[in-house]
Image (tube, rainbow over all chains, first blue to last red):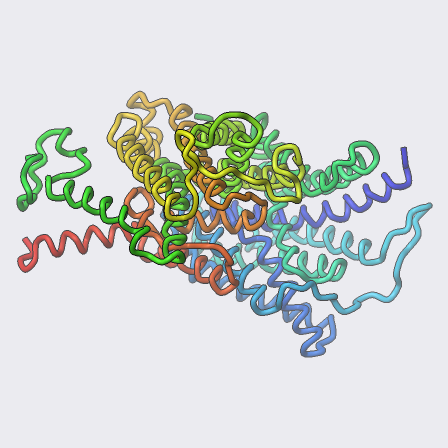
Length: 297
Length: 331
């Protein structure tokens, strides 16, 4: 047994897992506030990463200017999606809404391939030092950065929902739209804000992944991996999404360890979360922290 | 009533038998038979290119027909349809290669195997409300495609699997022109099966589950049974279509059956009109080699149809038909 290798993979898993957690968090945000299952979450990551990449390489904007510009863009973009495409669908059956987001993801995916090409592009270097050593482990700086940014975003999100006025309005809307409306909360604005914030958070995650791995359309796989994470954590629990994300990230890398040490099947890393997804749907469909009012029929 | 050649103005359907009849007038039945007879002439008339497109429309039409039972009638979504399609293709190729079962029986067998595998994935989710089936089929899509690239005994791994040509009573059908009739026969049979299903108690139960599952349950409809049934049927038709595809192409490979293809199947159902059977056949002729522009177009079309035309082309077609029937007076 190769302990060194296992440890390295577990650190990897933690880093990737917190990123899954962040993306899952923004997914759950949309689901909780607007009851929309967003199949285009991964494409939001991708759009954020490409926008930031374009600003940094094509227009030579420094990172500390480019990033806020990306966020502003994503803010507007999220509102636009909600207002133009999803607002007319309010009251339609849930499957229409799901199909629209599936179609949205197809459109974004194809459009981005069309605009930026299919080849992965390296992201401009943001940090100088290559690696830090903790004990016997070599950890790349970008990984540390990724971990720090993810944790910061989680704390920010927690603060937003616990303290800020908008966060409270959003929670009230998620709890009961009619009551929220009667208390003077504009449900329309809350819906738009949910998309805007979710798009921004996703974009940050997208840029973080891009800094580590470069930008390519493969980045949108995060939007798919979000499903095992949110189902594990419970579809309507933000804390659950974070925990689910971290578990899925760790599990992926653990599967890779088992695979490369014992099984030699290859590619188990990619597919393991989906087996977990099926198993959870069988035994505990509301996940670890979700509301247990799912009706079995 | 059943013998009249034209429907009189107003709605005079006074019994359930009349209401559920497939052909309201003898004329419409004669036209349908005439239409099929005309299509039988297609191999003589059309060039190879158009014939291959017609065959593909037929094959994808059957798959979309199956998906429509799920999406249109029961109100659930599957985004693993392409994987089930491919499973049918590989299964039929495997059965006809490795056993002495002829292709003629391998195709329905492939459908059954696909339905069983579909149920293994769908069973936990089909029992739950709403969006869980989508997520389960998403997992099925990835797990199955991964399985195909891994299981060399079944699919040949990186080498495409060979499929035998279709044969009937020892006579081997070769070329598009002869295979066209096989596909046509399957389209007609599948269409009749699904149409008749929708006229039966089971079909109405599916629609009731979609429209209001609580009322349906109160009326004594077993929700679990009908949700799983519709998912199994959808997988079954995907398997049949995949098997037909395998024996048409004669090779089966993993290429091009990712999640985009599953979305394409959904697009066919939506554009054709969810909840309508004829609409599927009127859906676009969608074939291979997706360019980006085309993917965008498909996505945009899905969104546009859902927002502006939720009933699909079949609805528009019925309106146009109704308009001309009553022309020049609108009543």
